[in-house]
Amino acid sequence: MASTNNVTELIITGLFQDPEVQRACFVLFLPVYLATVVGNGLIVVTVSVSKSLCSPMYFFLGYLSLVEICYSSTVVPKFITDLLAKVKTISLKGCLTQIFFFHFFGVTEILLLVVMAYDRYVAICKPLHYMNIISRQVCHMLVAGSWLGGFIHSIMQVFVTVPLPFCGPNVIDHYFCDLQPLFKLACTDTFVEGIVVLANSGLISVLSLIILVSSYVIILTSLRNHSAEGRHKALSTCASHITVVILFFGPAIFLYMRPSSTFTVDKLVAVFYTVITPMLNPIIYTLRNAEVKIAMRKLWGRRNLGME
Image (cartoon, rainbow, N blue to C red; front, side, top):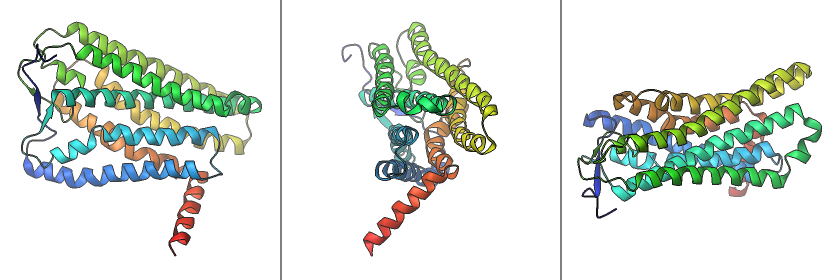
């Protein structure tokens, strides 16, 4: 890579150019990131400690919250610190590393959402066989498969990108490193690489979305045979999952399933799924889930007693 690259450092344009606006964004986004880490971290701790949250649904929720922290942390800390910097730079190797982990945790989250949809399908449509189908061993295998799927996807994206020559310019028109803005800096035609990357991302996204939509259609259809109380409880749980799926896939579909254009709108949409959505997920799951709220109150109560 060193023999074909004159560029070793990239300049990031950032979200906005006005220093006052950047400082305002710093004040806005720092608390959002801290809330993301604290909120998702609280779910991870609560699920790990609470004996009442031992079902597979909460096992998957704990891992989803962990992935949310990792996913957001690949982009947001540097983005926030760059808001106070006059010149925003990142090394080429650092850029590739950010791309790897961003796609790794992003696809892992997608696969975990699919796993959670499958879990709800079995719980609602095959309740008598639920514990046999979704055993503890199966839970671990499904989570491990999600991590492995994210790793395979991400390593493929990076393998396509690493051989590209970068000899100038070195200004990346985004507030973090992503594949399409980086491809524009390559000193060669990246049409084939772009197709490979789009096919890789698109195939996972489309198949996952089809599975998710199909699962929830089957679930909602089968709820007609349940009692009013059972229907309400199932709908409450599924509503949280569906909301998270829409928040995750909506911006992604907007960005990747349309022709390439100016990055101004893309950057604003990217802020939503890198900064805002990871903070919303713990709120969505806790506000609509009485068991999680009760377990958190018990955990907080024990902590306060221990401090007295």
